[in-house]
Image (tube, rainbow, N blue to C red):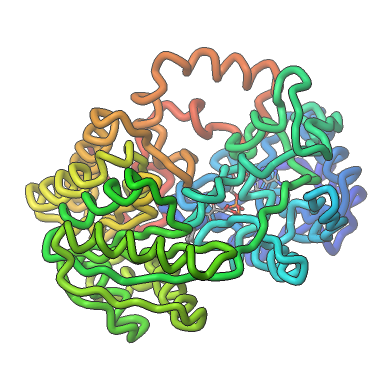
Length: 478
Ligand SMILES: Cc1cc2nc3c(=O)[nH]c(=O)nc-3n(C[C@H](O)[C@H](O)[C@H](O)COP(=O)(O)OP(=O)(O)OC[C@H]3O[C@@H](n4cnc5c(N)ncnc54)[C@H](O)[C@@H]3O)c2cc1C
């Protein structure tokens, strides 16, 4: 254990012995997120209020140990993996919904509140907060830190769009408040937005004020099947150009369809690609007319079949199947695992067809299965690499293929992540994308975190490759 006994005793005096975890069994489960990296923290602490968080961070500055905030640990790029060990601050016990004020169109929550729990509480007021596919587990703190978003982002926005105010324990241990309870604000630097997407590197979020989004009364959807993925991609940008903003528009390629059918028995048509499209609104006639226009566009792009539904139960079933994509892909082939590489990218909407076709070409060229799916309506695509993660050759091949995929994304004017963030895994491509800003980002980090204690080595700070600190038993020489 690298931390001095004195430090552990001081941590115990802040949170109490029962919320200061030091045994290997208790710490080991904090060594991972949903990605490919692993490192075990020295200690895990579970604060229950802002004052405890502030005291932990002040102690970290005194003894210069790393502090890694953590929500549910569902991020996919090693975000909360403690590369330099130190202390993981588990915020899941700060889980109070402090206020729901529909008259002000806001709610105020602690960071450990789970997205689905908040939405269950908001449902009776007919509001919601748009969340990621991991909403059953993801915390609001983690969503803010990653600027998470999901299938409803095209119409209803990402986390950044609904954050109005934050309380943050800065890397010095000082407590700062930014933003406000008002839905509008132009008060100087928008620090509440800077912290969104900062992945725990600029402070620990201890309270979040969110703008409520009204729930639509009616929904209607369809599953449109295509013989060629390019036609599905073209349909996406043609629908947007109508203009129609569907509440969901998801693309699934052939491998993904097979995986979801195998895991869930949903019976989706096994073609080259399908689109799951949903429109919503408060006027049933208008919703039906919108779906009719969507149908016309699908037909124009040679949809081979279309399956319609206004039944909320069936629609939920379809979205549940889509949400289970990652475990479904993992269960597809016994000898391979779904590895979180090139997991998330975003391209201009009109470039979706070209992107998916070119990803497929990379997959064929390297003879690696790289299934594509995603929230295609906003240009956000996901791929995964199906490989044997204990085979060094697979890593070397994947490394080259992933580089080519991100080269394509950047050439098309896209970004290396639409929603999952950078962590460690995407750092090489992030540096490529943001080369002209890295120095400025490092300066911001130094200004706020002079002792570099807050989730060190993440985003712009990691300068090595991504095949590092792997959770798999494999040595990969490059
Ligand atoms: C099956 C699956 C599906 C997913 N689908 C989506 C999706 O559709 N869209 C999407 O955007 N993401 C998705 N993700 C990724 C992930 O779930 C989201 O990024 C989520 O918001 C992370 O929340 P968390 O509570 O698990 O955060 P964690 O994984 O615990 O932490 C993520 C980052 O946030 C920081 N952090 C956590 N809490 C705080 C805090 N209070 N203050 C400061 N920093 C903090 C951590 O240090 C870390 O850097 C998916 C993941 C899985 C496993």
